[in-house]
Every structure is written in C-alpha cells, then in structure tokens.
Amino acid sequence: MTKSTGLSDGEKLLTRRQVAEFLTNEAGYPIAFTQLQKLSMPSRGEGPPIECWFNGRPLYRPSRALEWAHSRSQRRVERPAGPGRGKTSESAEKTVA
Image 1: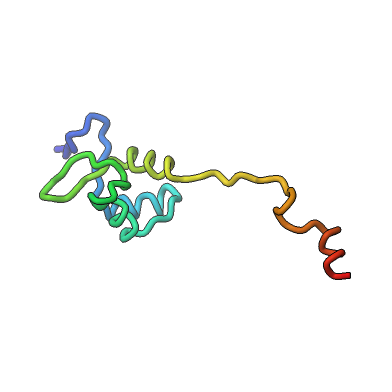
Image 2: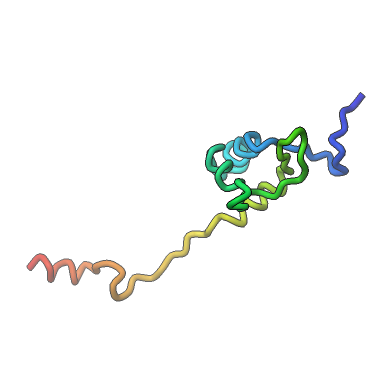
C-alpha cells in the first residue's frame, strides 16, 4: 500500500527544519534553521509560503520553498571602475611619490 501525501503531484511536505536542510544541502542556498525561524515569524512574514498546518506546525512544499529562496537571491553585478570606485595604477603611483 502506497502512502499518499494528499498532493496531486506527489511532492512531500516538509517541516521548517527540513526546508532549511533541503535548501542548504540539495538546492545550494545556505540558510540556518534559526535564520529561517526568524524570517518565518508572523511579525516578519518573510519566510517561504506555508502550504498547510498539521498539529500546529507549518508544512511547506519544496518547490515553493525553492522559488522563495531564488526570489531572495541576488546576482552579482560587475560594475565598471570609474571615479571614486577605487584607485587605478596611475593614481596609486601618484600617492606614493
């Protein structure tokens, strides 16, 4: 007999601790359980979307948690060197002389 999660796509629901482990170990988004706890506090409301509650515990879909983590990530943007953005070799020589 197969156990059903009640989700049509067969995705298993995760606890908050499991979400932190999943995002860190499998998805490459390093986040500590305690940080996820803080972000998920009702007063902050910045955590991943809760799928449902079971016995007073929030449960999450891994796919939605991954979307949440991706939405919080930022790409590194290379900025060209310009005035006030660091010394060039010429200006460094002038300061030494």
